[in-house]
Length: 479
Image (cartoon, one colour):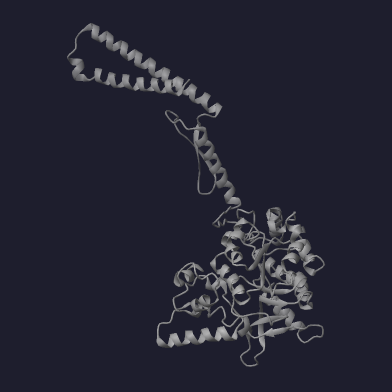
């Protein structure tokens, strides 16, 4: 039955009901004594009852038929906060919904259900209860299992997600990795720089761009390669384009992990992770994967590795086979801890091989820093002074002149004349004595860059693209 006819019957029924109410009004009825009028009233009552039954039955028939054809839903579906589906029956009279609206509702419901299991993001990140983040390029950027799982449960959790992790996949693009690296780093490169980026390209922000700018400010003829599946994309290209347009040599390249790790101790670790015999741990795997990729890249190709929160302040051209101390003993002046945020090594350097051996043999995904700063500290402590190793441990002034506990001081504006003199002295000291500044992103990202601060002065001095906004606005964009 057409919807218009059903609606007409229903309106006619309502009209008759209103008319009957007037007819049976006590005052109207009391004035009328005619037998003819009584007969008319009786006929109207019978007709109303009969018409009401017809409309009701036709409504049920139409609703059932339409529901079977998928034209009108029999009920409205809802989800409670726990994700459990419940059904609530709703009268269908006049509730005519289009097929397009119903399909859109189903699509959103399906999307919401899938999102609870595997959050999707495009320009923004979404994190669910399983601590897993997947970006629009299919890149899992925070491979972190739920807490309090047993080793076996954690391994099973990771194996189930492994096929969806782009950086572990092998395809035509990844197989071009070695050729792309050799083609990119030619004799024109003054210094070879590497960075890694395993997060979504959409989260590569102003601070990371500044790190790239600082490389080219001090090395106009240097070459910078970002090892990343997500930055090797149209979005990544757009992020790098302002520097590319200025003639700087910059590229993002998707890695081929089996090839990169081949014939190194890292190959064993990768096999164990992919086979499920190695526990990935509770710490995001992306963090530990970056620790290993930087070692393998330098071992295979040689050059300088930099974290993306490191600001280069002067040329690295004279440095070779060096690692920086993060802390020293105030009495003996001997280093107490090294860091791997900056590494400068020749191809096939034996210390890099020792680092990878230690990584594969002692990997622990449950201890922060165990496979990074603490790893390089353990190995250097063991091999330092032994024959066959030729490297230099630079003082904290070189790369880590300000520790993470004091980094906030560099972001604060001077309040007094004494503060202003300190800012100027610190700025000159960093500019003259250090090769760069590690910003300790995890701690410093929440600090605003205040006007007149040491950081503002350093950024103004070492940016390349400095003409797009006022200095003040530009500084605030970095956070």
